[in-house]
Length: 102
Image 1 (cartoon, rainbow, N blue to C red):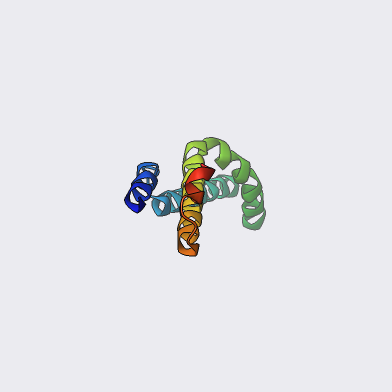
Image 2 (image 1 turned 90 degrees about the horizontal axis):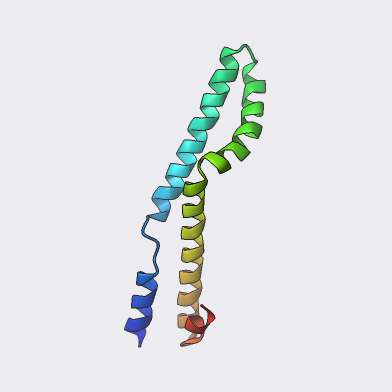
């Protein structure tokens, strides 16, 4: 029974590595931030103002530009949370209840 439960969890696992996706999303957002800061600084905007404006501009822009990667990270986090809850239920001795929730 437990082998079936473990097999069903591994079969529904996302095909990507969550840590790698989070790191990649962070790096590309920081790169976009630095690029916008550089463009604004080249246009003569003071560095502190350019940084503040870049944070405001890059936040929604990265959600649109990197939407697929953001969704992959969110899906991986949801999967990890479900897996953690399933393991906690098994440790509490609640067999089969976590399978019925899905």
